[in-house]
Length: 566
Image (cartoon, rainbow, N blue to C red):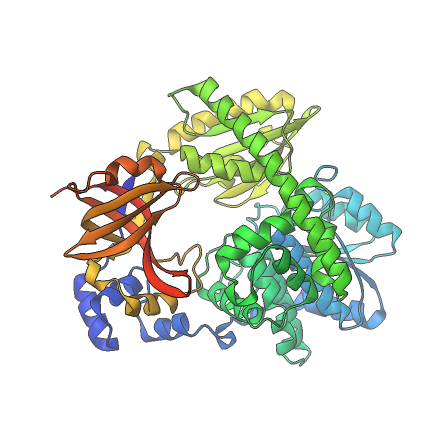
């Protein structure tokens, strides 16, 4: 693993620390996050709704709002069409609840993953037509649904697209497209998730019709769920949305559905953060869409009935347990396939396929395979002659562009830099694999295939104290684009090293007669580095607070270890 130290200008550090009265260690952490000005400091440490951008900077925002208002005035039937993942479900919940509370004639639709696939479907449009629906709002999908939007138009149904995925050169013939990634869109924040775009729509509606914006802010808890689950950068406007959304959840005054979901996830409101959403809440919301009917997740989020909330939260929890079992089997099969097929000569991109895999879990498994082998991964589950694929990438390789360059072999595709989906006919599979392998060979350097860990700065053991932990706490919420700072501590002598649990490493690190507890999750294979108390090691770690029997102490969560070199 490469240890990459983030860089900063020493002269700039000196000026920065003098200007704002910061210790050099704290100044380094901020500079490596691109924070160099007073305004950036204020917005970073005090993310408030007043720092949100004007929603009308987004292309087609006004057009969409005017059309929605007309639908409300005339009593038209509106359909909110969401994707089946957390981002799509929360985005659809936001728009559905907001306009329902304005007495709109509105309903929702979440497609079946296996029967309809990703995005707008003819089945969904046909259902809308039978219900007399004249306006569809898409959530987290639709930006590349050219044929489907035309199909809806032919049936007399107008479409407003709200999406955040990469658009193709040709756009659908929709009434309005609200997506900040459009080429001619001047909206400053390009990294909103689908729930973020949905929020901007209702925020804009409040502004345009002189409604209290607090009405829109009531949905920031859902925005936080979608933002964390979709792994978009928690910087800029997303930092404000995430901070305010978590603050709303942390108060404990939660909707009955979210409260029930936190109960089955064993998460207290005051503990909720990005990590707990990603590993506790999101998998349960995703599970029902992966294995069956995703609308059960939206029913949970929008219900006001505690009994119904309890029922659906238990369904989601049970489905998530089943999902983990299926996922484990698929992961084991995928690893066996890789080891058998490639042995020690791995290609630059792994493209795996199997007719027995469940299409609902291949995205999660692709993420795990990527982490194990540090390569872009595409996994395809075939049913008859059509395969549904899900891919995950590494830094430096744009997976969406790779699919775009080979679209002639694909039925459909979509996504963004780090994650994408596709459908492909079996007859095109071999050609697709051959061409994409060559593309990866030409574009992925050997350097990109080496795992990297990015380190904010070196530190001395005396600097690891409660004052540092207090400062780090002010940097929250952590997540992509604003990860918890990682430090390097050199020349540490290990003591009392042992394995605990399932391949976890525990020891104490001693330097200058100061010692701290260290825990390395899933680092049991590094036991040999810390077994000899006479040989020093270098550590990369994140400092944390460990609470045990009412006692709070500093613990280093170790991310990487190597023998110390003078």
